[in-house]
Figure 1 (cartoon, helix red, strand yellow):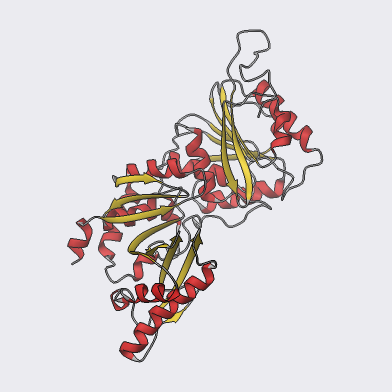
Figure 2 (figure 1 turned 120 degrees about the vertical axis):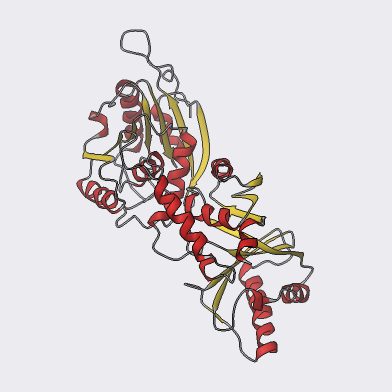
Length: 399
């Protein structure tokens, strides 16, 4: 049975953050998934059991890897209950196991996701009780089997969640700063930057070092899943293949490069953040790849003729700056003067303040940092021929 499962293809849905769908699709392409289709905060594809395991281990911009098991139209409550009971739940979990349901409901006659998940739970539990006299328990924190219910315009897709704990929780972070960047968002930003993983990568406001670590993992070809300590959701499935996971894991370990592949450099003005970043970098085993220094970005210069600079400056949301407009003006001045030849990317949730950068953007990508609507602003800092090295990106305070 395990052999058949390894080679047979089935539908897979991988969820991500708004704006990172195309990057995720590229990652799934690299795993040789088929029928890849970009959706809203999700990408659907087709793959086999090995590829499902690989997606959990390798996809840097994935939040969850789901395996759809049943789709139906729910007219009303009674119909939803009956449809859920059509699945033989004993094939999926035992009465001694715990489960949880994550429900997302949109544009449907059912208004509350909590109510829908309650109905689904009742249908599952009642089926067990009627057959065995016993029922499995619900555990919302660490269930053996996590189910995902997605209802849009009363079309329900029930899926098994193969990831368990969200994939953004890599496991390398010991400490964070006040407003840490989600690891998936950090990886997505680097993907959107088009960085070649060879030229210098600079984060001049590095905080606790998430962008630096994600960049180093990419350069060294380290699968993010290798840092994970918690088991994956699929490890409790009936068709779990331990040997297959071992093979996928050891293959990933063998692909990681030890010798530094690129210069990766971080600065921060705050000594506490530098300490936090150093701790996280050491925990990730990347201290030989990443350099961090306590320094004021406005006094730094580019380490080479060209490269990529990525930063997530304060927005005056969770971290307050004394004068946010002055801060962004200084960012623009420093980039123009000291980072010619670089592509610069600034993630900000304060578009008014960003106008003070005073450089023309070549791209503006909508993203969300938590609930904060942001833009990833790209500035191409060309070397000018005139004295003073005027940048082509200069002239306009456009955002």
